Structures are given as structure tokens and as C-alpha cells.
Image 1 (tube, helix red, strand yellow):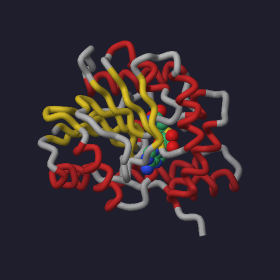
Image 2 (cartoon, protein in one colour):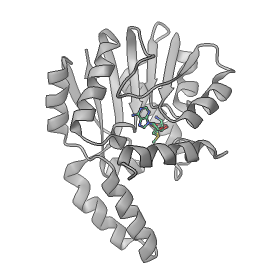
Image 3 (spheres, helix red, strand yellow):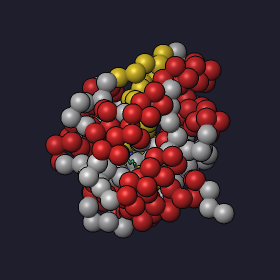
Image 4 (cartoon, protein in one colour):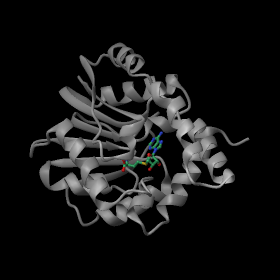
Length: 230
Ligand SMILES: C[S@@+](CC[C@H](N)C(=O)[O-])C[C@H]1O[C@@H](n2cnc3c(N)ncnc32)[C@H](O)[C@@H]1O
């Protein structure tokens, strides 16, 4: 039987085939303004400089990396979906400071180094359980430079789950579309910020704090952004 991880990976490989950049990165309802605001949230959290060596985990075809590439020294991006990786290689060929790898945040066999900044935008929700989240946090911790910062963006907030699911019933959608969307919501992992803080501290991070998501973004109604420091 297809497990949740296989379900998501298949979906990501399908999204990679789209010509629409927002579909490719799983943000199909985004406008260019919303993408710019999401990048702004990341830049505010990580305060990039020309010495930064950046890891972009679960980068899809690499749009976030391509937009921040002029402001940092080097970026290594990876994704576990083969089709995302091959498209990322094609697109980032125009960027001499971006390296693309095929890897999984649960293994990170090809990722080595001392990253000063890490971006992990909208990946942890596609893991299966909190043990896998601990593994992901610890894999990221191992490749960070002392004093490094990692931003984890867009995690469904357990405290807002009931209200979020209920909001589907107020949409002007047909019943089947609502049913499918609710099934999808149940496949995601939902997070509690206090629990994230405990997991980050157990991993070894010295700090973990929540940051606000720009209020123009749909994610701000029911998601959490957080930063960890080594
Ligand atoms: C919603 S998209 C986000 C893409 C990009 N980070 C962004 O925010 O624009 C999620 C991406 O994470 C990747 N992904 C999910 N689970 C992963 C894992 N365990 N390891 C590596 N990549 C993963 C998917 O293949 C997909 O490309």
C-alpha cells in the first residue's frame, strides 16, 4: 500500500512537470507579489550576506535559491523528488553559485559542509511522524556552522487545525472538492510550537523562536514559521 511519503513524492514529481513556477513549488495559488513576500520573510529571518554558504532543503526546482543567489556566496540545494532535481539542474545552470543534489532530508548522504544559513520552506509537513522530524532537525544541525541559523517556513499549526478544517465548509466549492482537500489536510503533519522548541533543544540548537508570517500570505492564517540557531 502507498504510504504517506510515497503519496507526496509522487505528487511532487508530477508538479515538477508543470511550466508554472508556482505549481512547481507547491504554491499554485500564489501571485508574484505573494512569492516576493515569502522571499522577504526568509530574508528577514536569515539576514543574508556575501559570505553566507546556504543550504536550501527541499528546494523543488530551486526558485527560492535562484532569487537569493546574488546576495550570498554559495547555495547547495537538494530535493528528494527526482523530477524536481533534474529541472533544478536545468534552471540553475544559469547561476554559477548554485549546486544541485538529489537527497532526502531524512538521510542527507550527499550533503556535507558548514552551512551558515539553512532554508527549509514547507517540507517538514510532508514527513510521516515526529521521529522523522527529529531526524530531519538533527541532520540539518550536523551540517550547520557554529552560530549558523536555519529558517523552517510554513508548518501547519495544530492549535489552528480545527478552525482551518472548518473553514472549508464555508467555501463555495462542490462537496467532492472539499472532501478531497480535507483528506489532503489529514495527510500533512501538524505542529505544536512548544513541542518544536523541545525537539530543537534536544537536537542541540541553542535557540528556537517563532516568527510571524506576512499577513498577506494564505499560510499566515494557520501556519508556523520558526528559526533555530546553532
Ligand atoms: C511545497 S514544496 C516547497 C518547495 C520550496 N522549498 C518552496 O518553499 O518554494 C515541497 C518540496 O519539498 C520536497 N520534499 C518533501 N519531502 C522531502 C524530503 N524528505 N527530503 C527532501 N525534499 C523533500 C518536495 O519534493 C517538494 O519539492
